[in-house]
Length: 299
Length: 318
Image (cartoon, rainbow over all chains, first blue to last red; front, side, top):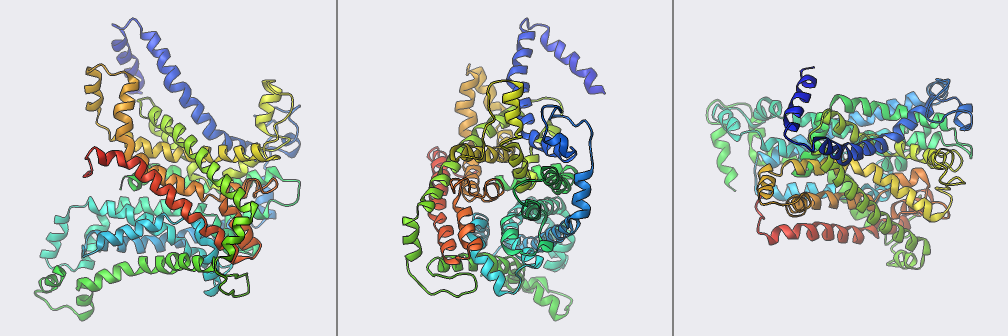
């Protein structure tokens, strides 16, 4: 509450000598708040529309003449109930969760070790290994999914969530490794030297000193990987056939879109429930997201 | 080879067991640390990449091992109007969407760089379109673009009375193309804005103060300070953006699946349709491989085109 009291006072003090105060306030409104408002409105509208559609009864959904489409007159849970009890949605959610957690764990382990080797166990050619891993990030999944499908079939993993757990690290590991190299760089090397002098082994140093100091980096990399694997689409679409093993994004698109009459209420309820876990997860770790997004770009 | 001098130091006193000593032997430890990451990437990235290029020269279909057919797949693609259509739309899609994303994203970053209350909350809200699974927000766009119950049509026809009939967003080629581009821009703005905002925050305020003392206008400050200082980060973000827009799959697959009349196929969706849905793995791989030259060109263009400026000014070491 102190802020709200303080602000007008400061503004007054600034504005007092300025006879154009009102003008500059208006200018600020027009140049900053108005465009910002438009941006927020447009960026959020699809989510509002998604949410409101999933609680609307079908009659309201298809009748704009009698009901204001921007509001719900008689909200219903029918679509969500249909989704939870008449479809395999809980199963899809469970599969997606397993895949996301599995691939995140796998890529965190692999990329922590790789980043540690590249940044701390400096060896000849370590910058090139780092560059090679970075270049792997530039290979888009759209180029890889056809040959990967044959690889997955060769390994006998077709139609199994295990295939996704093993394949997702191809885009998670490069990202996490680069993020963690940046974090390891920020940890003073002297700490490790002290431990070396005291007779600690390299692995002890990694476990007792470097990793505890890199926890924020590990969290960033972890939540980012989780989100990326939750949202992944093309591999999940190409490698999973049976309805029960699908991940949420794929299942909602392929299992709920049936026939020519789209069940918009159910579709939007599915989208809402599929987005909600990542959105909640995101809201808990906003700062880590922002720092990892910007950190990865700056590296 | 300087590493070989280290191990004797590490095991100076106390002779631990051989396993511990092995893990303290630096070359072995390096190999062990790199093995999981490089192994995963080799098996699931490098090998498929090579395999994909090989498949593009064979007539493999699902369930039948193909034989080498040389350039036949590519020769066929060159005569295939659908492939040319997909190339055309991929280029248009990438060009317009990248321009839109960067123009609007840069603007949003500049707006967010001001001081105002609830700034971090706003920043968190703005990233939302980028966090939510693309397919699911694409479904929302599909519903927004509905021919009969589109909320945009409702606004324009029944509320504002600017039009007399509903807009048919996805029913004919050009409106469908632009609808997809709009959805892609919507999804791309947050990433661009937040990345560029991070770049903006690294520019020292003293530069602006110096320029203001010299009487530079707001536009001049943007043109001669902000823009040149942002070049390196713009180059990186744009390279990423171009690569992932050109190879986009989800939006098109979710909203139009290439329709109406195959007019909105991107190369990735065409590759999926031929390779996985149609079973012609060889041809699908050829379409996917045909994306590589475009990607290399776009990467070199955006990266060197934008980063060159920096080298010319001799600031290469930061």
